[in-house]
Length: 289
Image (cartoon, rainbow, N blue to C red):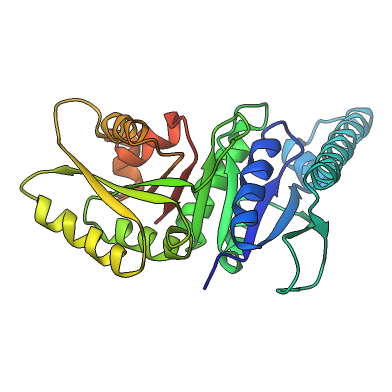
C-alpha cells in the first residue's frame, strides 16, 4: 500500500514550516493526504501548575492573560502558515477521504499535552513529519519527536530546520541487521518502490558481513527497488558520522534507519547512532523503532 496519510504536528513556531514542506514533497510522490494538527496545552492547566497558596488574584489574572495571548498567537501563526502553504503549493483542503483526487490537506486543533496527543494520533498515520526543533518551542518539538518514535509504531520523518528541496529521490538505508532496521525498511517499502535509487549503507564487522548486506539488497531488488550497496569498516569515532558521510557521498537526499537499537536510557548515557543522527543530520531522516 502506498503512503497515503501524513501527520504534521504544528505548535505555531518557525519549525512548523520545514515539516510542512517535507510532508508536502512526500505527499506529492504518492498522492497522499496531509493532516496538519495544531496542538497546545490547556492554558488554564498550565497556570494551575504555576500557582501556589500565596499567589495573588492580580497575579492569577496576569498569568491567565499571558497564557491566553500566547495560545491565540500560536494558533493564529499555525493556521496562517498552513493556509499560506496550501495556497502556495496548490494543495486542496479536504476533510473527508478522496483517494481518487490529487494530494490534499486538512487543519485541526487539539488541546492537551502535545507529545502524548501526537504519540497516539500518529498510530493512524503512515508517516509523522517533524522538524528538528530550533526555535523557542524546541523542547516540545523534541518531546513530540521522541513520543512519535517510541509510541506511534509508525515512520517518523525528522526534517532539518531549513526547508528541504527533495525527499525520497535517492534514499540511503542505514543497515545494521537489527529488527529496528528491518521494521524501518518494511514500513518504508511503499516509498522505496517509488524512488529513483536506493543505497544500502552498512558498517561491516563480525556481527554484519558483506554477504548479509547483499541479502537485503537482493530482497529489495525483488520488490523492484533500484538498489546498490556501500559498505565500510567501522572505525574509531562516531558511527553516525560515518553513515552520514557515506550517505552524502552516495548523493542521498534522505536517510532511512531503525531508531534506538539500544535502550533509550543507554543511548542517553553512552550515545548511539540514533542520538547522533537526531542531533546532527543535515538531511531528512526517516525512522522507525
